[in-house]
Image (cartoon, rainbow, N blue to C red; front, side, top):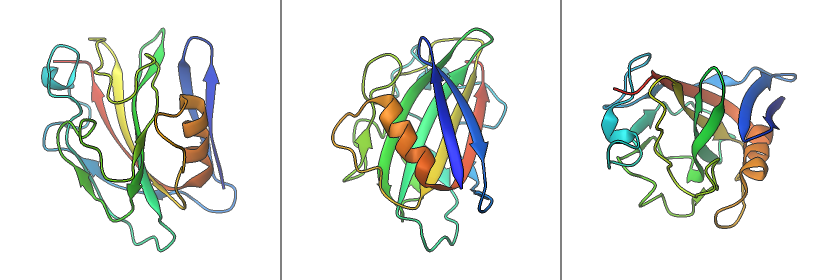
Length: 172
């Protein structure tokens, strides 16, 4: 199975997924604060101060699951950005509370995102698509501290066995 993240100039990010050996299992991603296709609440944008929103996901019976990763990215007609990457979350975890970036699960790491900061970088574009994607991985990313974005995304892509997504459109 191969899943590739392709990076191109100015921090733009495109996701391209292909399955060669097997299909990637689907997961259900929800939030008590976000609704699929609805606006991102101001509290979780640069207009508020809540940090990352709470997220929940289904735990597929994947015996090979070793960790979870979360990638939050945005897309407009002219640019893309990554706002948060949290990885090496224990595979038994099925939810994160609000502002998990301030108190991430033990053993997890956060990548440096498009803005150059580590942790959740609240989105600011009023007219954009915000994707909260949860990945189940067959191993750990295993990088130390706040690792570089391309390196972390590559490791996540190489190990993905299941994926789910919740998309907010625009900011309230």
